Image 1 (cartoon, rainbow, N blue to C red):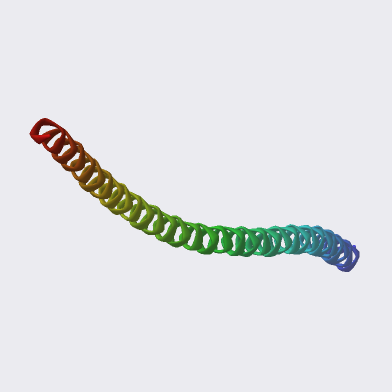
Image 2: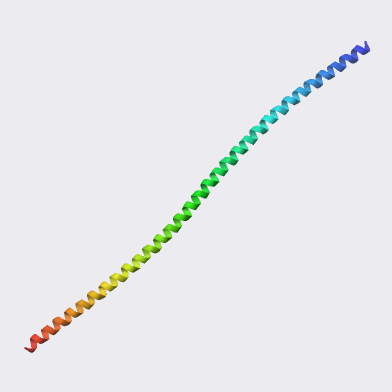
Length: 116
């Protein structure tokens, strides 16, 4: 009877150990699946981050080019304004000179008319 009890106790312990082992194996498999899911999420996040970084770098480069282009346009516009102002001053000076010549000619004509 004692041998049978020992055998039954051993069978029970082995059965319990197999159950625990199966339970642990199931837990390990579940954890492996969870880790794989987390790795996939990490990889997807890294890809998305790399894509956004590339997009932002592209936008930054475009905006830097646009800033330089706008600066050049501003310089050109200022140059044009200065050139237009210079031309306007020259035209005003020429008009003033022409007016002075005309006034002088008119005054000379009046003076000759008075002398006659």
